[in-house]
Structure formats: C-alpha cells, structure tokens
Image 1 (cartoon, helix red, strand yellow):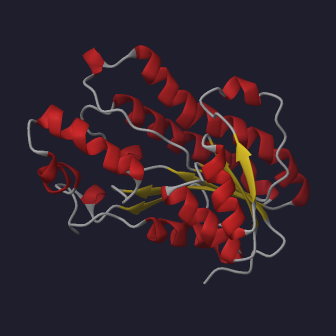
Image 2: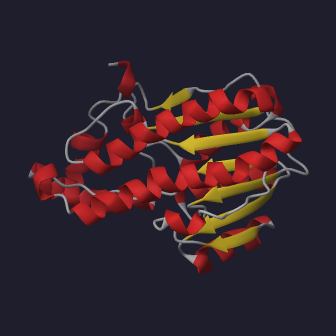
Length: 249
C-alpha cells in the first residue's frame, strides 16, 4: 500500500479523461491536492471539482510557451498524449512534429519546471505514462513510438540526475487501455489493415498479449499511486510493463 499523500501537490497532464482522470482521482483519494491539466478546460474543471483539486487549461503541443514556467509540485504525472495511425510515407510532417512536441518536448519542459522545487525540498516523484510502444514498435505509429522511446530516455536521465536530491523518475508501460484515445484508433486500424472495425481489438490490439483484454485506467492509476508513495523511494529509472505479456515475447 502507498503512504498517505496528504500535503503533497500533484500535477496530472491529460487529466480530464482516461488514464489521467483515473490517476488524478487516485492521487486525490490518497490525500494529494491535484492540478488537472488538459487542453479541454471545461472537462478539467469538471474532474477538478469532483476530486477537490484545481484545473489548468493548457496546450502542451506548444511547449516553447513553457520555457519560463515554474512548478511548485511534489508529484508530476506526464500523461497527455494523442495517436495517429499512418504509414511513414503518408505521415503528415506537421502532425509528426505535433505528437513529438506534445509527448516528449512538453514532458521535458514540465520536468525542467518542477525539478528546482523538488530539489529544494529533497523530495519528488515523476511518473511518465509511456506505453508498451516505449519498449516495442508497431507499424504505422512512427511518431507515437518515437515519442515514447524518447520519453523512456528522458525518464532515465531524470532518474540519474534526481537521485541525489530525493527525486525518482519512472515509466509506466501499459498495452491498450480502455480510453477514448484507443477507441478513436479503431477506424484507422480497420482501414489500414483491411478488416472490419469489430475485429480490430482482437486481431490488432490484443494479438501480442497473453491476456486477451484491454487494460483498465484504474489499474494503471494503482501502479502510479504506488510509484509516488514513500515505499517506492528506491524505485527509479525503471519501466513498469502492464501489457498482458506483450513485451515478454
């Protein structure tokens, strides 16, 4: 079990839905004051009101706007992300850059903004929501896979620099999670693979997993909750797979 997070301040990006909302809820239930950051300000406000936290409407796809940001937080959960399914030769370069900005450059900016305060207090927990695609590749997802592989490296570097200051940094690597992000992929996957949408989950999303079901957001949040607690103080620079055995192959 995790320790009590009373008095801790947390920021969860992409916190208005899916994994982010589940993480925000879990952290708040454990006593943390949670800032729900999301592009959708009204949805962030809704989640924040429900958990007794704060909302921050922010477009993380423009990370240069965060150059002068300072974050006074104890816990950072980098979760915001999108997906585009396309062959490399057809991938729109602007969309490719957008995904990398949102899912790699923005986490760097947020970590950079949070570390000074964490160092000063001698405590910090950074959890980067990576993916099985942070350690394995799949076709037609070059931007997402590249961003997640980069996030793995950023997380490990943060762990090495933060260790002497009481700051840990880890990745959580789920397979397909039951979220709006995954649901939006189904039509694209069906088109590219030439199969009906009804067959995408079984024939594309779960084909590599030994356990044939989607991951639930609350399962991811439970692992995140442990990683930010006191009993995980020696866990850093790690990547925790929650992929039903996908990466065991």
